[in-house]
Picture 1: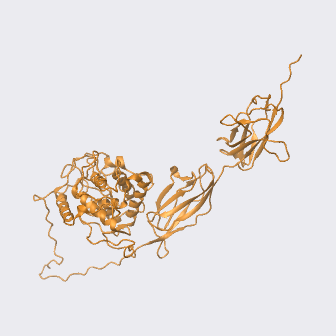
Picture 2 (picture 1 turned 120 degrees about the vertical axis):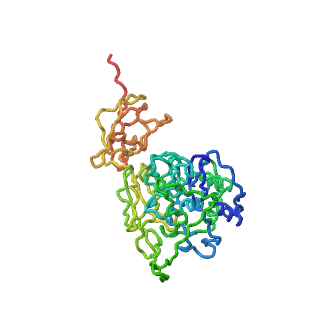
Picture 3 (picture 1 turned 60 degrees about the vertical axis):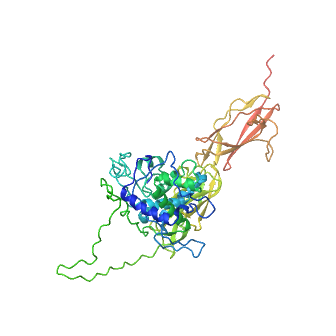
Length: 556
């Protein structure tokens, strides 16, 4: 559970006792020497607890202290490929795993030096909430009901008065840790993220919480490929040696191998109370005098009959398991041609369909749409990526795509988030803004004396199908009077940014009203009548006469 309260928080004795068992087991197995970052030659833990950073946050909710199995899970590329389903210990629910991997990639894009491994998020998620209660989340990654830590009312834990008016934890008197990564509301107010692009920062959403945890762990200049920095990051989440050792053991376990299991099929770890919700106002666990707990006696499975004797046990019916739904791939769900004029929205929406291994639709699949290529087109808010989930029919539609001002071709890729399956690629084209007509807004003569500046400025208006044509590119060229006009090398001219003489200006643009005011025009010493041709993107043209004439001599 992450919080920003220094060392004010403390563990309940009950949890400390359980954690002590975990520490003893780790010590016996030589855990302090376990590599923290895999077998790639990176630094290893020294086995000592480093001091927390000055800004370290401390957590104190009871956490999942069970250790991973001693056996090593299968890993792709070793003996066999990982199954779709398997051990509830090494398996991670699909949406939860996708959220961890997406958070890793998002952090890598903006803070590559941190080297955040998704397995660290998985280890903390396992310890904090049993992977969001075994993957019990909806299609958007939000837990079906809030995951709440105990009331921090000073009974067994710190006294932390309400900081969010109950907005996140439902308690307007005291704070409680919230969500699958167990953030204190005041910490979430600082570190909360929108990991799934829905415009909200929800601590109960695994995509939001995983990204927030990743940002939190990468605070400062940490490099999580270094064991000392990784230890400091974990301790900043919860400054407890037992917590560090437990997280490290799961981190190492997941680094050796894991696999995806369907959401909601992973077992809820024992001791999490079906979701770690102690209920508003309920007392915190009370430590026993000896510092250990004694389990309550289990009721006999076959209680005596009122008249004596023992009844025969009633066999428990075995439920028929639902065949696992395996994602086989994505396919285009009927998306048409993607074309749009610069500055407008694409009328066609990108749509994909997720299929299971039998060719049927698969719901709750996270799909990431990515705009790529040399383009300024983007989804709403200028975002280049958007992640959404398939519905009951297995389909999902991308947000509205808007063309920028850059004309040309680009692609949009749809991928199953966090999975190595072929992407579905869509070609898109942005065409330049066009005008089918252009004309002067007045008929004033444009004249100048040799070597002087033309009086007045030429102004034109462009339209397309009778409507204003805003932002249309226009080329202005001084042309000859030939049957096939070419650029004139004498007569009127423009000046470029460096003050040099030019007789062609490209990529002039009409304003929001379709109006283009030409820059200043100058005359050389050659008198005569000349032509200025304006051509729009779309082929519309207008020719304007320019006259260079000597001033009349004064009357005698």
